[in-house]
Amino acid sequence: MRYQGSIEVNAKKEVILNFLGNIELVASCFPGIKDVKKDGDAYIVKGTAGIGFIKGDYTAKVKMQRTNEGFDLEAQGTGMNSNVNINAKIVVEDGRINYTADVNVSGILASVGARLMEPALNKILNQLFDCIKKKVEIS
Image (cartoon, rainbow, N blue to C red; front, side, top):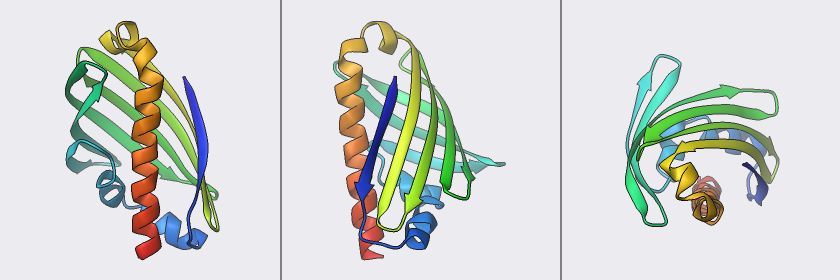
């Protein structure tokens, strides 16, 4: 599945980049996050998620690489008898964050939750970016 969008942020590019470059700050905006630990050039993220009636804990390994335009993000997660792989590109401009993400899901979430996946992921993305916007604008 491919997700893309943009969000207006009342801040300069450098302020947005500094916030997004701090995974702990970004993680504080992600619903259900319980723990974030640095592991070499990656982070191990633990949390709880739910899509429809399927709920449970997950663990993900997240890598973010700074680029001239913003960040490239790779994440591999397991939980709820499922696997999720995410490759995302975040492009930052003055006043705007643009993102594209390819999300591949296998296991129970892919088979049972397929029709519920898109609305649930859109809700999570909206919550994430609303929080990021608020925190960047007050910094």
